[in-house]
Structures are given as structure tokens and as C-alpha cells.
Image (cartoon, rainbow, N blue to C red; front, side, top):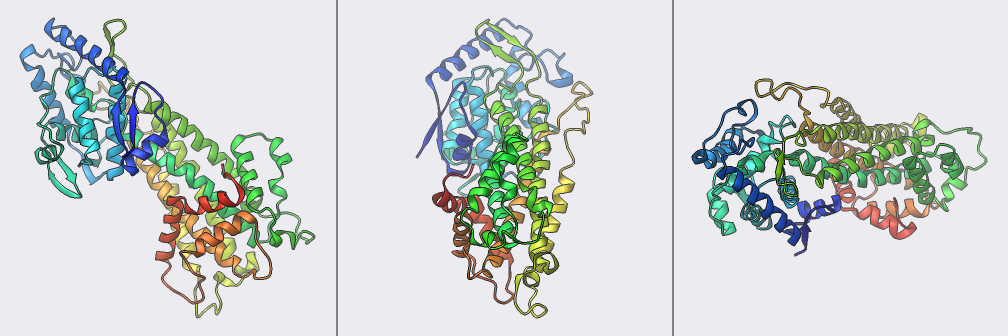
Length: 509
């Protein structure tokens, strides 16, 4: 089993994906263990001195002015986990919960949270054992950290709550037995440390960004295939155009599509035709795809910064022997990035759906209606376009930013919140919808390529077509297309189409 060491910095989105989806294990670097120990020594001293430390010797939020006696510091930490575990809705997916635990451990590894090494070790043991705490997806306002969902993770460590063991839901105490653990006896400040951070929105958003990066590359492939069968021009991919407007994503998209269609006999066959310019969905595809790529890249930068940050409160500063009260738990950076990415990925689907319409509409394509013989008897890809339209419309609704809607909490002590976890959840849904839209475009473009029996497509588009045809045959007569869409969506998620294309033409950026 692969093991990924978590330390001060250097944690990447690829690392997170391997832990979340491929069950890589985690451990701590030696430097992290030392930092954790130094911070805990400070917390212990402050409790002994009965020093006023937020969340350690005081209540929380609007109750921060309430002093907690030394004898009640442990009870305070248990109470915060129980009182904050008010999540509702469907459980988060196992891959998301694994990502949450990994990010919580990574935050602790920085040595600013003020927890014991034993507590971090217990959380690592749960993660590495494949135990998945049940975490309802709704309830976080994305400000004082992802308090509610993180409380459900923390419950399992004290033998409360519920968790999945081999897909079976069991009480938290039984889940600890599987891990060979006794329920944790939380020390001062540890309950607060377990829940005060942005790890839920960052986990959901991080996996969505990972998928969006992959999807953007597949969108270039789909667009290149559509351009070929719609008798589009390669002029729009000329590098000179994109040097005159040097947005990085635009140049990358144009270069990808240029290489995908290289040596295309289909495009060469109409070089001297009378059409002056292609429709925007073809001609402007590098500009639209590129803008989305740049937005996704921004979201990736924000998420990877957050993955390597300390997001609790208070923050222990061992170098000075002090603690700092601040607002690193506020999810505004992630919230804004996720809302931006919602729009970016929605636009990839939006332009794709318009290309699908051109493919199935004989007045726009010059191809058989809905890409099937015996139209009327067969409906072909007619309803596939409906589905794409429905998904695109749903994405438009979800592209309304969550971050602009703040509702004060905790008796107005927490009077501005980010709603960042809602932003991240929306992003995840938009990406999944867009994957299905791009899958439908790939299906339609492959169906159209079947009609060009006497001419070869580009080197890259042919490789994509061949991979598609390994799992979905040509549509000669109507059949249930839902399974076809699912198969192509799975090819996108597995990277099989991308692998085949890159083997033919080199890296698709």
C-alpha cells in the first residue's frame, strides 16, 4: 500500500486524490511529530496556569466570555463534539470523508492546532483502516470552520456517532474496535481543534477541482471531434491568433485541438469550400475552453494553498510560546474559488451542449437527422440532446454564487459566514453534470465519424474514437442510451480516452 507522509507543506491535489480514491495510507513526518508535541506542551502549561485561552478554558462562539474551570476542561471538549454534530442530509461519499480526515491530519501536522500526538495517531489509524465516519453533507456555514460535519468525524474518535466498516454502518465504538483503538480521552482544546477548520469544503472542492482539470482536457477532445464532423476549419487553432491575446488557457486549448486534428483528411477535404467562418461554438472553442481552464487553475491554486494551511483558532505559535486568535477558519477564499469554478465548468458544458445541437440538427450539420438512419422510425440521439440541455440548465441554477449569501450565527458573534461548503458541494454537482454532457458530445461525435468511411480523422481524434468504440458500438437502431452515456462518463473518469489520445499525440495539457 502506498503511504504519503504529511508534514508542514508540499501536499498536492494528486496526493489528496490518491488518499481519497486509491486508499493510500498516511503517516507523519518526524518534524511534524515534534511540532505537535511542542504545541501540546504549551496548551498543558496554560491549563495548569488557568490562563484564559479561547476554546480551551472558555466557552465557544458567543459563549467565549464564559470561563471554564480546570476540572471541566475535558468535559468541555466532549460537549463541543456532541452539541455540534447536528448534520442533516445524505452521508458524504466515502472518498470525500477520507479526504476530510487526510486534510485534518495535514492541518495538525503543521503543529499549530494544540492537540496531542495520540489524537492525531488515532485519526490516522481510522483513516488507514478504511473506516469511514458517517458525515451528513449539510449543516456547515463555512465560517468557524466546517463545525458540523467535522464534529461527526470527531464523534467516532470518542466512541460515539456511526461509521462504515466494509460498507456496513456500525456504532462508533464498534468502529474503533476494528481499528484496535479505545475511545479517546480528549485533552484541553482537542474537541475544538477537531472541528475548527475548512477541511470539509476543501475536501469536496479539492476532488471537484481534480475532476474539473481532467474534464477540461476531455472537452478539448470532444470539441475537436465535433469540429471535424461539422466540417469546421483548423484556422481558429493557429498559434498566431492566440499569441495576440495571450491568456494561457486559451493557448493551451488551441494547441490541444490543433494536435488532436493533425493529419485529418476530413478537414483537408473541404479546405477550399465557400464557408467563410465557423459558428462560435467551433471557432471560439479555444477562447471559451481557455477561460474555463484559467478559472479552474485559479481554483486549484486556492485549494492547494488551503490544503497546506493552518485553519484553526486559536493557533499555537510554538516559536514565541504564545497563541494567536484570528479567523483562518473562515472559508471565504475557498468559497469564492468554488463559486468561480462552478461557472467555469458550467460553461464547458454549455458550449458542449450547443455543439451537440449542431451535431443532431440536420439543418446545421448536413448530417442525417439525430445521427441515425430511418429517422422517424428511429429517434437516434434526439433525446440525448434533451438530457444535455437539462443538465446545462441545472448547472446554470447552481452557478448562482453561495458566497454572496451570509446569515449571521452564534448570536451575531459570527456575523459574516462564507457558505463555502455549499459552494464546494455545488461545484461537485456541476462537474458531475458536465461530465455527462461531454460524454454525450463524445457519443454524438463518434456516431458522426462513422459516416466518414472514406476519410481518416485526425490522429488524436481517431484515438479517442477507437477508445469509445471499445465500449459503445455504432447506433444502427434505437436502443437505451443511458447505459452508453454512463460507459463514456466512466471512460472520462478513468482517463482511458485521455490515455489513448496521449499515446497517439503526446501530452494533452
